[in-house]
Image 1 (cartoon, rainbow, N blue to C red):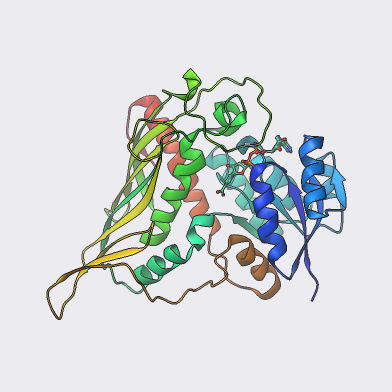
Image 2 (spheres, rainbow, N blue to C red; image 1 turned 90 degrees about the horizontal axis):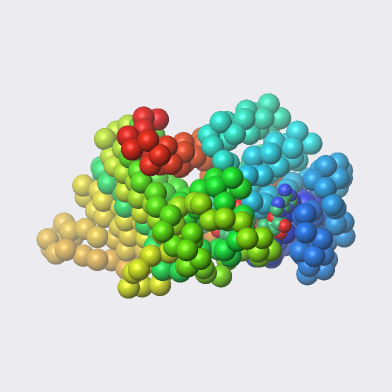
Length: 350
Ligand SMILES: NC(=O)c1ccc[n+]([C@@H]2O[C@H](COP(=O)([O-])OP(=O)(O)OC[C@H]3O[C@@H](n4cnc5c(N)ncnc54)[C@H](O)[C@@H]3O)[C@@H](O)[C@H]2O)c1
């Protein structure tokens, strides 16, 4: 069977672990890469034996050997690179966040429709065994009416390298919420099976990065002394069409007991759950005893537990993609609304 030949656009920190996962798949190979940094480009190509190192996206995308691209550039370039790749006839797996705003994301999705190519946003948290087990229980109706979801990721010191694009509104769109909040929000709505937001009330704060505090270990880009003007803490209440609500809290830096605390909690009328690790809470009907079940025997829908394998299997054998374009767009609309609500001080209707 023909292998899917990958090109990599952006060869920074995450691309090394992504390339490892992609190349673990027997039907994938890496044929090309591009980055503005020749040093990071050379590093990726030599680590993974990638034969063609390009100095522009155009050159990579005009290489007929490239079937699909993985895009992991700063957020500002996500939609432009995805559009360019689709127009060149390449399938796309894109890093989160989708885009700088919903208008950009919509343009990408219109191009996906027009070209008939495969596009997926790589929401890796959906693929873990624990997430798949709780998702499967939710689809079986175990929770009944899921009326509340709580999604949070608190890092005490987790700002990617200060002075890089990560801290710039112009290059990243937003800070912690676009980097880690997006994962918890996406997973929460995925488990709830509910991507119909109607309003958002949010607030964002810039309290640590702007003082040169709170740096963690992420990001390989060079320090350029770019000013930090994005959120390092945000909070939001999202109301859904069916009356359910979701709370989202995200910090890159704050004073808190644990260095890293993240979870998605699901509240249904018949059961509840938390995701990190997977636990189910319910009253056992036969005994009336309240149970906290930590060993869940649910079979995994996608035993490979990997976003890239899902994408490659979709291309080679039609495996259903776990992340749907319309879901990615709904998440982008919520992210936009949190920023707008914080800026205006008003609830934003979607
Ligand atoms: N799914 C996840 O859990 C996860 C984890 C980390 C990062 N990410 C996402 O991946 C993306 C990259 O993150 P990273 O940690 O690798 O960042 P990074 O700073 O380490 O790497 C970014 C790379 O992009 C290159 N670059 C900058 N502008 C470019 C352009 N116009 N064209 C081509 N290359 C360009 C830089 O030279 C750098 O090598 C971000 O969007 C981030 O949100 C996702």
